[in-house]
Length: 72
Image 1 (cartoon, rainbow, N blue to C red):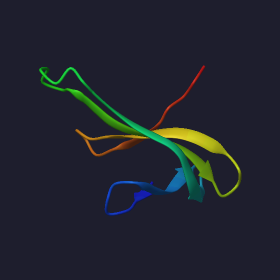
Image 2: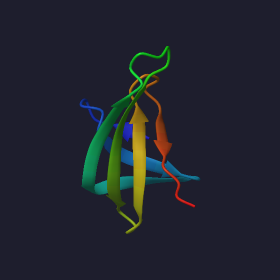
Image 3: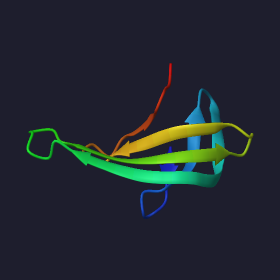
């Protein structure tokens, strides 16, 4: 994952492939359980990748790490 200076996604790595984010289709944030030792603070992005895939990814504001949201 590579992000810009505002922590928005620029590229996503899937397996051995690094794919450019063509468009952000939607963006939202959640801030929950702020009173806990480890609160939940995330920025979510629905992104369109250069190969046509769409993904939901999020950045954990506490750790600074990126994750792919999986739906099953």
